[in-house]
Image (cartoon, rainbow, N blue to C red; front, side, top):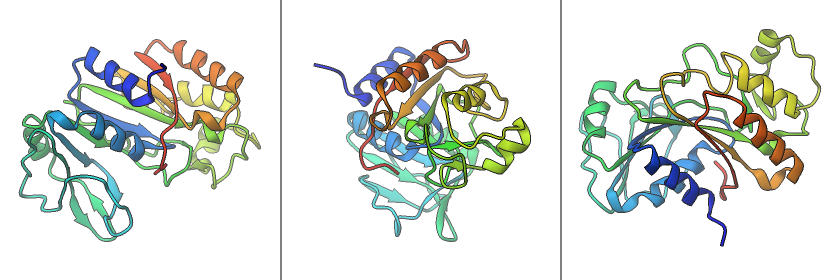
Length: 238
């Protein structure tokens, strides 16, 4: 029986002895975090962000506790998934980085959403992001393969203007060549990850043809900075 995406991810994370994990990119970061929180629940999971998360008013988080006092770190015991963030207008924001580092040492696992993509399958990083704490053990970089074959515009590509300005791209459509450019560009998929092992996850692979998924996997495996490449699908995309 084939392993699920989260079974494969969990096995990889354990092989890296990674307990504190930053998740970056586009096309399903929050879904990846929710799935991993379930995967590691037995040992206790702290979930947070170094940028922003949707407010619980707008997103029904399936966690055991939501703590929004940035000065009062929650206790994360075995069998619990605890979201900790700061109130920030209509979203949740980051807590003090030093306090987060200390709190992360007491949790079984810590999962950090380290940038935003406004639910687009592709993105280009802005100055100052992703916000990856130097103490994390690995980075999961997410790309949504549902974007392949769609128009390269604001509906599918977060910061498309910055991408075109930086690369000179005149592409009308997102293709595997677009993906290859983003894998190599300093402000692309791997930005800020040079100090950490990187697991590249192609989410939404059921929305792409088999040959597209195979070529995307091949492209990822040619990049020496990437530790492992996976493809799969998260349900309930956010």
